[in-house]
Length: 114
Length: 113
Image (cartoon, rainbow over all chains, first blue to last red; front, side, top):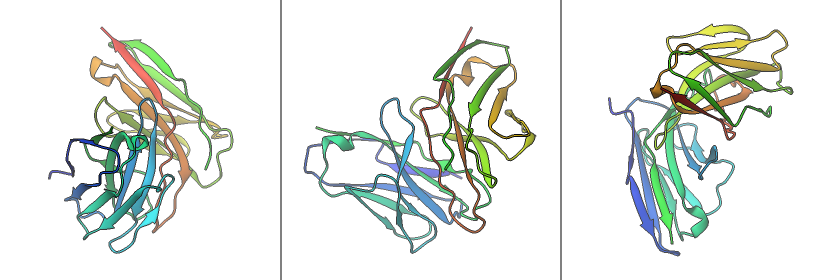
């Protein structure tokens, strides 16, 4: 099993450009999450999808949109990138049964907006 | 969600036992305590989770006193590969629903030869 995979690994954007970060999991998990991590900080939740067909805002949703394409895939879109969105983006998944705080994280996407 | 306080950094040497304490004075009755580990340039990895007393797995032990206002993550005989950031998280468990992870700044553990 690959677990949680993310593409791309690195990306540089100019201010105002758009892009989509892709995430896929092969663990048959119901719930998927997008986080951002700024230097020296903990992770902050951007959006999550408790189950296929649903999405909800997290702590810092402004400037982002998400799509739960199917049970395996959850994408994050930046419509008009800003320098404040320079960060490392992590996707995660878990069973979504609510019986555990264990989430499985991908390797991250390092995004720089100039 | 209960706020947590943990040391910013710690240093240790190979072969020593490391104990990282997390303070959560406002923990609620239905809150659980969870610890994650994060290596540089990687996503966090779940280590252990508990509600009270002691929990042990193949990686670590989690000690929770009766008042649950603090918890201690114990790493036995650390090696250089245990150098990482360790996060303490506290939050309620919702059966059949979504459990929200709130990460603080964590504790940076450096293990020296």
